[in-house]
Image (cartoon, rainbow, N blue to C red; front, side, top):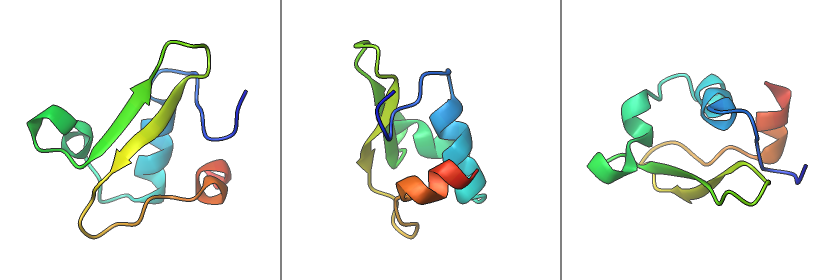
Length: 68
């Protein structure tokens, strides 16, 4: 598995929400004014953060994600 990619459904979103506990599912609803877009290219590599536009929270580092 490549670093930064997650293969279990919602695994990446769950990890991000553990790093930034104030985030809600609405933050990930990018098409409806959410600020975080996760993507899976169906290439076997799983989910990754495609866009991070949250106004007050920094994109989590790989070390932060690995720690949760």
